Length: 113
Image 1: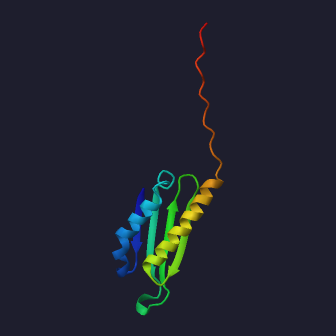
Image 2: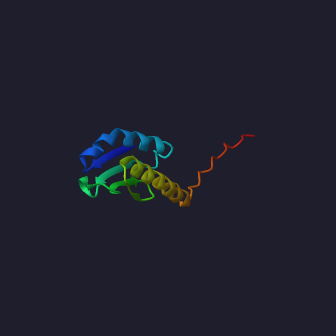
Image 3: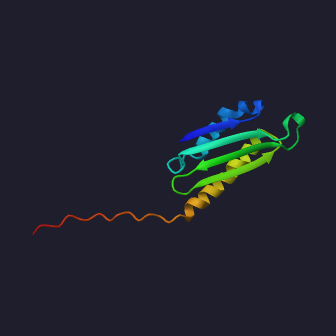
């Protein structure tokens, strides 16, 4: 799975490796269904503070479209954790709604008499 990390805030770059590792661990089961993920972190208010840390996750799925989730919190980690939890719930619900493909039946070789 390919994970892209984008951030507009210089302080958010410190969370790059942690975010990538947590995302890969959370999507380990679904890595064949989610080939690409993008994590974007932004500080909405700048240095003024407050509840302004934005985390946006984009999960590009194979066959089910793209799941985009945003979360805003006062800290980077809580914004990421909330977005990841919401994205996983949405992704599993979306993948369970898809009809399952029927497996082809194997033919038994004809018994010679």
